[in-house]
Image (cartoon, rainbow, N blue to C red; front, side, top):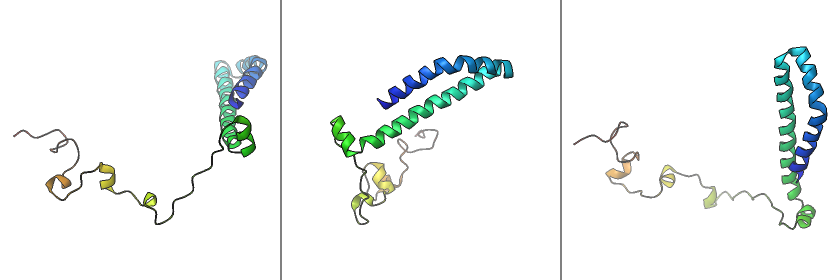
Length: 123
């Protein structure tokens, strides 16, 4: 809702401000003046969008606002304890998706069947 209101407000301001700003930029910088003015206006538009998205996120974490909206307030996740399994660093085997073992297949590269980077060798 905040973002929509910001876009509507910035668009209304654009209808008033941009025609005069573009004509002044054209007289000062020529055709490049239009580019300068429109890029500056896009920065204003996306700054308003980004700010209101961040503000909405912060406000949704406030208990009073969350109760008004009928949602459960979100809280940041607590950091894991040092001895917790979730905080243990992942190993290459963990990312490989199972398998493991100590046979020759465990030491082969996992690139789709062995062989060189050009493909499997004939034979």
